[in-house]
View 1 (tube, rainbow, N blue to C red):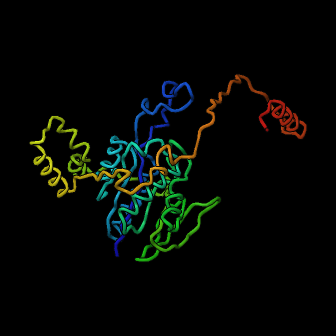
View 2 (view 1 turned 180 degrees about the horizontal axis):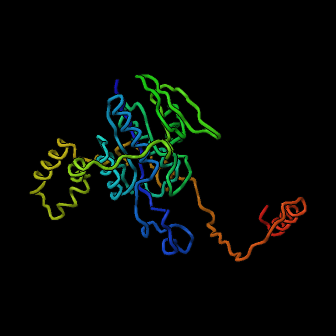
View 3 (view 1 turned 30 degrees about the vertical axis):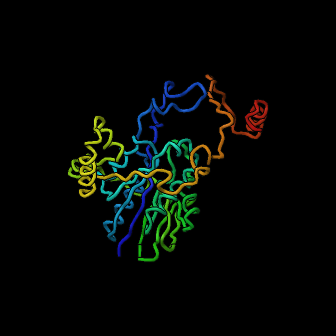
Length: 299
């Protein structure tokens, strides 16, 4: 038996290090002012996929949607042990909310085909919605298990996993193909392998290859084609798919496919420099509630 796992990953701004300079006047995050990192729980999803490959055989494919810079997290995935990488990139994907993102990712999964298990982190730290994974499963028409902590057993047609629930966990079995969202307590992601790092740091997308030959002319086209063939044969080719490549309906991707609108952004600042003792009595609690109501904390 072998499993083909597709792991959706994301490059996100490091929101743990937000400072005043990292915020725009309208209250939104200035992504350019923050370091870009591998979304933490996507690393746990990738580690789970690599562990499954070691236990049951198969291969691990990683895919992300983003600009060319997102190829960095794809290369990191190859350093860790992934077999193949896909960059879903097109200016038409820009401005996508979770609905448009999940649609684009589901198309990538369909184009890849023959996937047994789709894995992704529970949520991305730049949005914290935890919506994309479940929405991808719905669009693919496959069962989903969320908050997965461990895969207990897998067979050719079904898989058994442990998921976190309030106050404990549950063990569930579902048919394959399926989608799991993975939590941070699932595992400790392995570091990049030194040998793989030396090998796959040369992995590039077509855009990166062309950029490295910016002065090339028509006479160099043959050499570029030979270089692409050489990189593909050595597993150093990061596939680059556009909206047209996955057959996307342009009305369902990017801004056009995103019904989410941010009406207002408010910065909440705790301005109080003082504190008040509240007696643990019925009268003390009643007084506190009365004050909070008067301040419109409860609405």
